[in-house]
Image (cartoon, rainbow, N blue to C red; front, side, top):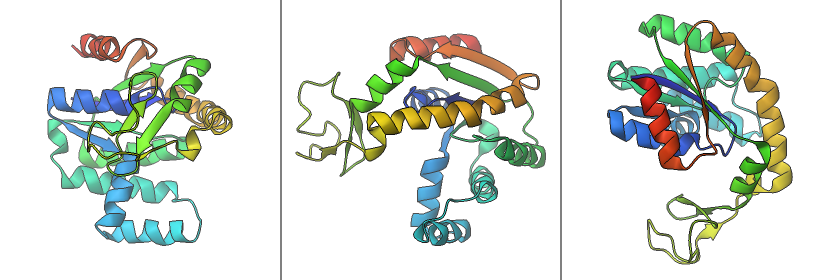
Length: 213
């Protein structure tokens, strides 16, 4: 099972990716996570990315592509994977095409999670992250946000700067401008699955599974 997962920030990609990765026993590949792991493990590409970030520069598409390929080649990608957060631009599409050609990956499923802007804004502005273990919760779904349910630390939840409403709306605008063309780029080439991400998590998961059968 090889899945490319698309969706706007806050639509629930990470949540669904973790559920599906566990169900199908495949790797969840988040570009953000592998970038942080590469930096922490001081790999060749991780050091290059860290040097750029320390200068306040963006990590270029080519380097992100190399990190994705490095990760795929280091794991048993033939058993399957979920790619979350890549590609996000047309430039990254061409890099992914090269990776798929080299690794002979031919029929991935493209899953597009969709939701209304206001629903996403409400979801993200109510989100809090534990500074100790990085667990993310929603204030709408917990009675006590003073203690982390994962690591049991108290007073560790914060609101991330990128979850402020103005920032969220800007991120959504960027997503529409940069990622919609990516969907058009691949639409005629691969199997596409469009799903309503505003449904409860369990419903979205079941809808994905039903469409993958």
